[in-house]
Amino acid sequence: MSRILKLIMTICYLSFVINPLTAQSKDENNITYIKAGKLFDSEKGTLLSNYIIKIDGKRIADVGKNISIPADSKIIDLSDFTVMPGLIDGHTHLMTLDNLKDEYPMAKKVLFEGDALRVLRGAKRAKSWLEAGFTTVRDLGDSGPFLDVALKRAINEGTTIGPRMFVSGPIIISEGGQVPGLLKSKREVSEDEYTIVKNVDDAINAVRIHVNYGADIIKICANNSPNNTSLTIDEMKAIVKMAHRYDKKVTAHATNDLAVWEAVTAGVDGIEHGYQISDTTLTLMAKKGVALIPTDISKPLFKKIYDIVDYQGDKDAAIKRFKDRYQDRLQRAIKAGVTILTGSDNYLDLEMPQGEAAKNILIAYEEEGMKPFDILQSSTYLSAKFMDKENQFGTIKEQAFADIIAVKGDIENDFSNTMFNIVFVMKNGEIYIENE
Ligand SMILES: [Zn+2]
Image (cartoon, rainbow, N blue to C red; front, side):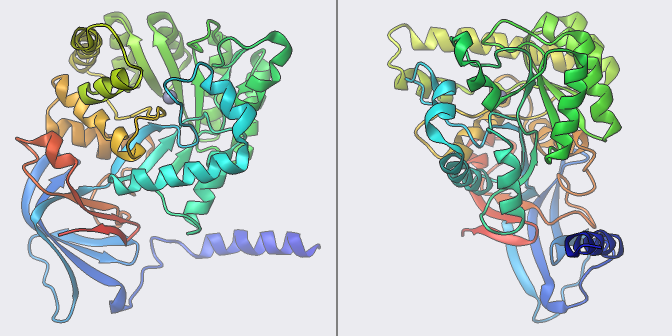
């Protein structure tokens, strides 16, 4: 037996015998108590008062009102703040930052940036998400040849700092990818960035490739806007069947109603964007339990975008047109009973830390009539549940990872300002931000 094979077998064996749920530390030095003045119960969507969270190493050991704290214990006093599970951004592209004034940003990053520089820049952006209070992200492509897997590994091993990552690898897509204006003789540019499938067999193999190279979730483009082509229902069905066989969720970029309807019919678990979705399709989504990740833009970010591109028209009127459509779609989805998750889709250079820009997704939902506690529930418990991880994060409960943040302000009546006033960020029991 080769040494490498022996090593692999040893690792496999250890992963059986070391169960993180049972290997909890008995060392009192690893115990920390958090005093939470207000605590957001993400499962119920309510606010509790004066709770104590006991943390043992990476995990939460206990939560309650009557937990006794032994003398000389390590205490983090967040009595003046609102404590909640770390936020989850369900739609990021950490390896992409497009310049709004650039005509061909997609081609540029593949042709000129290169993998090494791209992942280093992605690492810096990842840190900004964590500092904004996102302890988990679902990174959905535009990440070169599995650079998201590399960044995730670097974060997990402590080489660099960032949120817990769930990654898709390249987007599985039909001819041309999302690189508009590409010459046919240069089609390999889109193949560097996407997994392009030509038929059902190709689609099946694409999932195998992704699972093999470390994808946690499969991201497809039902229609690959801004380009015009799309996957067929049979290709999507094959992808879903294969992905579910490997216990991976499938989420689909789908902008127009036909693309959404076809993706939902094919059995996907989530729809990204869904800008022109009809009530009939929303009803089908609710019936099949398909989540919607609306990726809406807040008014302040719209204004920033129009300022950067020096828009000469009536900015307020243009913003209102967009926001009215967003609001209509979001409210119809809520009314239909569709689960709404948060996803910023933030990949534009808005001249501010990317994580801060991403947090505007919460503000966008509030502008469109969603209540603060519903937004927080979308961004914590429901987003974790979508990944079947609601016992691990997105909730503050026994045995979950200690992914905990705190904000200063009135969460119910001044949601927007409060959410930007982060005073504490903990991921995996480690503190990244602790302000007064
Ligand atoms: Zn996106």
